[in-house]
Image (cartoon, rainbow over all chains, first blue to last red; front, top):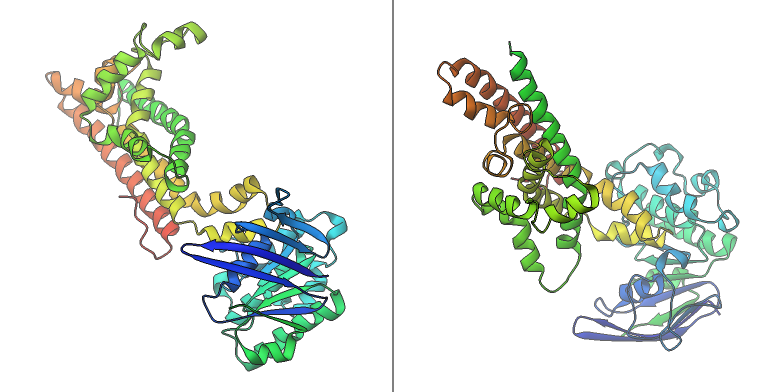
Length: 207
Length: 231
């Protein structure tokens, strides 16, 4: 079992209940905007505490309200690719990429910087500052930074929006390689049916 | 250009102002963090107390310091009992007065820069494996640094110009508590002291202007086009 989630979230006045369990591969979390897709990703990453419920990924429990388990985000080993990317503005691309890599215990690093550069085709960008990057470049750096932190699973929030056709296909190929070559469970938030058709092994509609 | 005594005045002022900034910076940062990031009851009271020296007549601040640091005062007594020191009529006292007067300006500048740090970057750092402290030192502090430096420079300028609280608290003793403004005041009282007054005044103008320009340049960098001013 990859993602095993059964939680209730409180966002202001609204309460979001969400329950799903998926097998390996890519799981798409779909639904209209405002349904709380991003909030669910944040809860799995440990950035938002559910009011109740349980989160387990790949067999290890990250959160369990009844058992009093709430693993802090830095120990969850999730590769989170945020919708707004969040590259550190004061660090060059190289330092962004290596931020999580340096913090990961050596046995958890399954990707080297050189491999990531080739994998994502970002070698020439190493010395640039994030604000000088194009949307597609920043997107690939954000994915590289997440993967270099040695994650046990990957969370991606709308990784394909605001990308043109060619870039889109490039990122889709990258996501498929993460699944096929690296074998990581991936949870993907999207509202685009074409992305779901192309990528998802499982679909979880959130209403 | 300057006489020996005038150089001594400038040197003492620099010593007092630098000591004031180094002593105040951690305290100002703690208050700024508290006010920018922590929600607690009575926040408005803490906010008001920190800013009090900004609006209180400096003479009143000096009086309150005198009461607090007097040999039987609430700060003076433990200071004497524990460390056997007194700051009264000493350059350390002038530093205390300068620090108290500089605190609100520094808290304001640092608080603004902390509020401008986007917590989304901190969240990203946490998911990449950084604990709260590492996140603070690698993300929050570097992003807030221009504002922190701008606050320090402003505080330095404020310390350099401190008059009312200092003369009330530790008097006007040449070589010990007679900083630039106090020396100018003293020279004004002496017949024929005009030349000395103008020289010291010119130095004050140059130092304050330089501090202001550095501070504005730093806060502009911090705001990065978002118009982050500390004044």
